[in-house]
Amino acid sequence: MRFIIHDDFWDLFPTTLVGVVIARRIDNTQSDRQDIAALLADAAAGAVARLDGADIPSHQAVAPWRQAYQSFGAKPSKYRSSIESLLRSAVAGRIRGVNPLVDLYNAVSLRHMIPCGGEDLAAVSGDIRLMRASGDERFVPLGSAAEEPPQPGEVIYRDDVGVICRCWNWREADRTKLTPATTDAFLCIEALPAIGERRLEAACADLAALAREQLGAATTIEVLSRHRPTIEIM
Image (cartoon, rainbow, N blue to C red; front, side, top):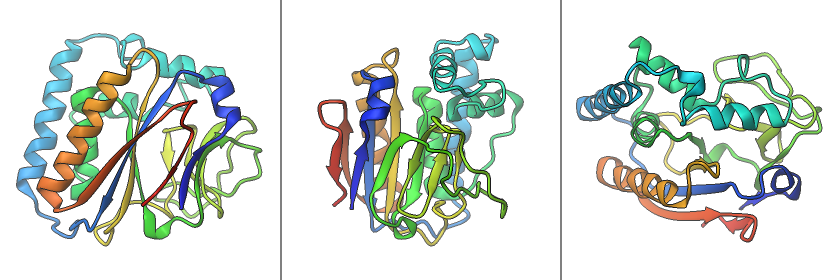
């Protein structure tokens, strides 16, 4: 299995970086992890404090993502980046636990104010690809049974079956979601130029360390760029 970022993505975002944490042999079965719940709550409180009442759409962690979404035709007020949605939930006091691994990547996202996401590798078919959609790909969003295919030109993650995340990092697919049964995961962290390589690397290291320390995972970290668009998922 490989992770491949296609040329049509790089043509639009030539200096973007994508960090990947591969986590193997995860124990994600413990539903009542008060320590992880506290970690997530602390990350949410810290993010709210750093926002300090600022307008979220114009905040430096969010505005570049709104511009990026506009560049492939997605209306930012309808399709919000994962970091914008997470920050809005933190401000509203609506951060809730999902399962330990998802809670950890949400905590990292809030700590570093950068989008994080993840897929269950056992549910992925073939290679994972970051590319622009043709518009006829299959996609069933998280928590739904109805098809919601992407728009032509939209940035998507996909595998051989269909889309696994729409509108770059807006909405995950139900098919490849992380669950308590997940033992092997593909975790990604995306950095637009305004975020920078150092901040991306720090977030990846943070997530890998938490997965090891909290869930017993074996982890590897990779960073992809236009000059390194493909990795083997080991």
